[in-house]
Amino acid sequence: MVTANKKPTGHNVADDLMKSVSLRQTRQRRAVLETILNSCDHPCASIIYKRASKRLPGISLATVYNCLETLAEKRLINQLNFDNGPSRFCPNLIPHVHVLDDSNNRVLDVKLKEGLRPEDVFDIPEGVTIVRMDACLHGMIPEHALS
Image (cartoon, rainbow, N blue to C red; front, top):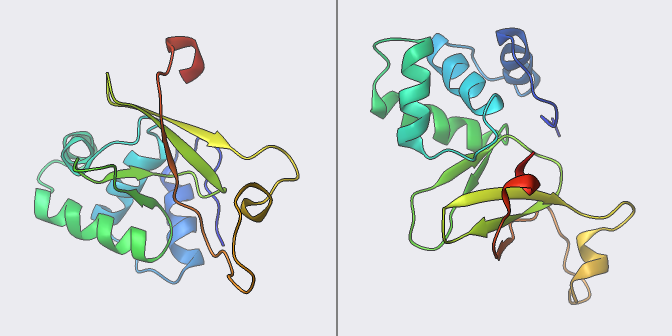
């Protein structure tokens, strides 16, 4: 599995990630992936569209949605669905949970403590294999926790 746990900046990172999963590289996919890789706020598609439009004027919202779907299917990004809100997207592929602050819509990545696995935290029935983890905790996130 490819992990995007650092804050990349150049399009070479996006290209390398797409190559690693045999995904055809297009300007549109590169713009969308670079936008997400350089975001730490778990943006929704409309925000990604606004940001990607600065990188690639003329990209359509439909193209952004198609790129997001493909990137999520290839597991280059995580698609997050919080309650009834729009899907949001996360570049962090290392196992973690999200803390959602319902009062201001901020999201914080929280990794597992060193050496812990999901099986160590949750009472998972015997025979169940964890492939990936999507968990959301709700709480209040102070400003200093976001840095």
